[in-house]
Length: 255
Image (cartoon, rainbow, N blue to C red; front, side):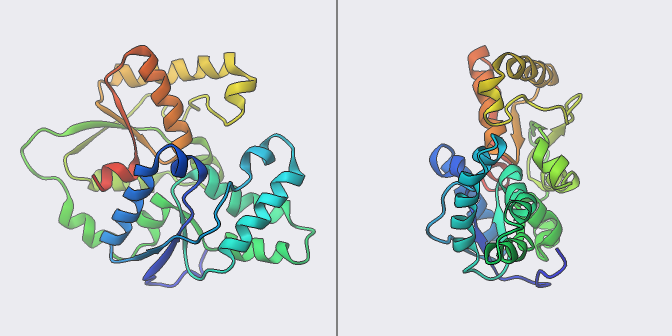
């Protein structure tokens, strides 16, 4: 990950399926925030699913087909690729190279593209040269009420990409936000893609534990970096009749 230009001026957005189809406002917030940092955001056409669901269920032939399609799209770009999802970023960065290791054409391309892929918070918090100045200018120091926000660290983001500090740093810099720590914050919310369907009983128990922690914390908003986990949590809160809102991190940074 050391070959990224010191001061990128252009990035490419890989939006992910869930954001495109279910939470487009999160994708628009990502674009808005990156543009505030002075970056030009391009959206490579032809994007489809990264293939993670097929990969996780062992349907590697289908996963390879979707990976090749994604690599055809992203391989035609230059510069950083920003993904507003820890799980999809991990799929491209960590699993594409192993999935296509024996492919003479797509194996090297997978390695090259993987080296340019960044999860949104990771890129902004660790790679964007202008974020420190931006944060200093927008830090919330007013005496007005602050929104209490809990951050859910999604599993792939933490365990596969090792991104822990960047999202919290972004929240600390957000105007009008008070971050409230959740107990056992890194415990899985129970989504896990198709796991929530195939192992619904276990998934529901894990979700209930997460929802209990959220409701006990007294927060008004739950945020995170993966739309999949956030949709799972939002569904659970809705069924409980909870007033707690659920937003992607970018939606808090670029309201």
